[in-house]
Image 1 (cartoon, chains in turn yellow, blue):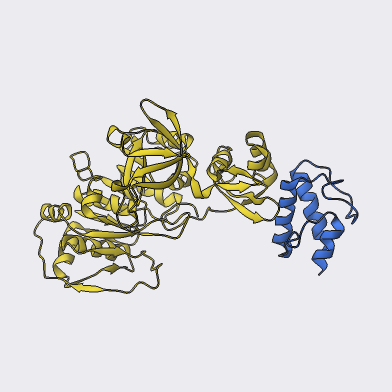
Image 2 (cartoon, rainbow over the protein chains, first blue to last red):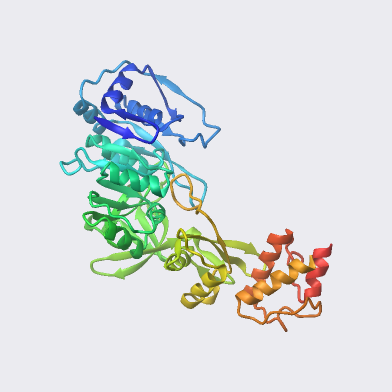
Length: 392
Length: 74
């Protein structure tokens, strides 16, 4: 039974069992030349209960030394036995956070902690997952565990074009898709139908209601989940929209201080936190007091000061993306001595759409306060994303 | 240089719905006759920096087109 498929490679569960039985060592700073080697190496470490740090698949961290440890030969006779060993693994996995607003941090998560977000059920058995994340990062590992524990198949969509993605989703009748909002925006225009998809998950970045509704309209049979979480905490809350009703189990373990969401320390990986209350860096607003319902505004560190006024780049991006010709946008600040930051943007327009910088600026002026309007807009072919699929 | 500066100034004026200039008159005041506020000046600075790789406000405020030209000529 197939476990992984990409345009250039594929392997089965049988290949996994054969690979494990042939290994005599595991590299604790694991990096590989291909997804196949990467995934096989991680599974081998997990079933041997060996701690492993996931160095970026493309050798991003050049100063990381290979540290192989010897292992005894292990023959696993069945997929069920493989799954059992994965679910009981005592391994810790070192994962680098996305580093979207600071240098990436190394965060150690135990497989047991990661397994708390894995759902094993008939619903997920033999499911077909669109694999959109870098497997060396938090969301990628989460999907990978979800798949292997349910004997599912992963179809590699990471860094694929829109056409390749839609072809794979339709041809291979993908049933589950988990991705960043940036990935879903890349699928615009939303002129396709994907009736086979049963579950669509938004993860890793703040999403907009318009985006969720656009995707939902094309995946008419899918359950929608918008997840809030981080590499440090793992998934914490989910919603079908952009407002999150805080679950009962979390009510006493969160608080909001100066608009920033704080989480009780015990819910955060000890490798990055020893505080009683952990500042998430996420700014929220309370939509409802009872039941407590919150909405995310932006990352605290992404707020730009423009002449003493605070501007959320996400708000400006969302405004630009609402323009009918715009596919995606990235807003950032250009430092200058006059006002601190000048708001500027890169915009990717929909195929065959023509629009000018001036028209987009006019659009923003009609919808935003003057100081929030991007003053320079560069039209680009593609918005650059980082290792985790989030905008740079 | 002057031609490019003229283009940039008129682009900034146009983007901000301000009256364009017919020629590069050195005596024109950025905040006076050209009615540039701080945000528009910041835009001007950044566009000039992108073109000429010079921060015209590095050593303090500039007031006129002449001030900008003097900096760019250095």
